[in-house]
Length: 507
Image 1 (cartoon, rainbow, N blue to C red):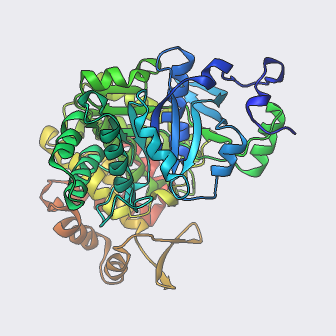
Image 2: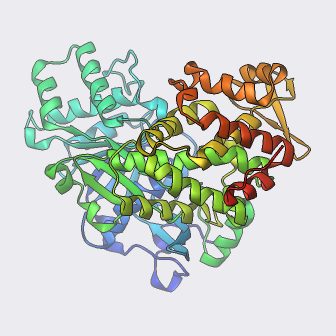
Image 3: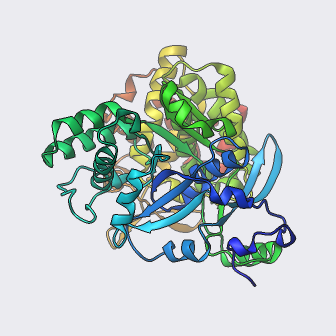
């Protein structure tokens, strides 16, 4: 079977896949990208490719890989081309598309080709920098930017910006729009502060530091798309047989896309690929998108993971195929979490986002395991769900029924039965499961000493866990306790069924 490459791109060779035209592979390099991971390939790179096909952005991407090996050789063998398989549900319709993305012009190794990377700084066509170096990539470390290359991502970027400053003799019209996509709050603001601190630590000229601050824009951004990456061997073989070629970089993603970027009119003009897809949004304030994702998608995941797992449904998709669990998830998200978002949200916007999330949860091509979602359960509840709970109570002066059941399932999930190799294990449906939470020992002790009602009150009162005394919310502790007792006595499926009917059960 032939391997994907430029030579393979001919209409005669095309199977069920959208191929880039030859002229798209000769567009100028306009983007420098730090990172080769699947999220970048499945979201920013795909969106730039989509814009190029529409004649909008008309630019390609130079990719920087910080370490040799891995997929860098595959990029070279395939001339930067890769197939993105898009699978999922949108507005109730099942979507299945294959696209050969041609936005990547070349991949350069920071370790062995640093001089070539710095040479890109003199390219007048270059206007954008993108990064995804994992959450730990945007960190301040002691770094010498004269090294080849500097150690950290901010150090590498600062060295590149210094080279650009010198190449254009401090011309302020040659600054760049920098969009980190690392999944940390205020990623652009944090990166900018590190760049400035590194500039001072490296004793760079005041004129350059002024250019760094005034000529460049570092934007906060939020990305949201599930990109599992390479499929399993059987799926890969079946898809390659259908396509008629071998692709070492074959990447799968869901349908949904969101890339929200905080920026002004200049940023919007430079990032013209925004016009190619409704999933790209450039505006001065992106907090709405952050709140919707955190409270509705992430919050629903967190409050559902324990309950669904205890009900014997290991994946999100399987929970959505169960009528009662699907009903709980729907009611939790749109009935309790949406009105509790501590941010001004138009109800129609929130409803629309929620329905998109439910479509994503139903995606038959994505296997998202509840046990994975349960990692750091306590911290996720505190960050994602407690502000929503508090705002719901302030706003409606009522107990959020489904949030209370989610909390009860969390308490039941945290009931450890044994410890092995430093890991606490619970038991559900006759099988052990790991409790991957830093508070596991705390809960193991409570479950050994306390009855459910007292345990509930102790945990809700613990301000170290939640930052608030949740006992002060009238009726909440009683509701959580009732559901916890039902979970222990009746099991998760029966408890969910009764919760949907709002029928109290004597236990």
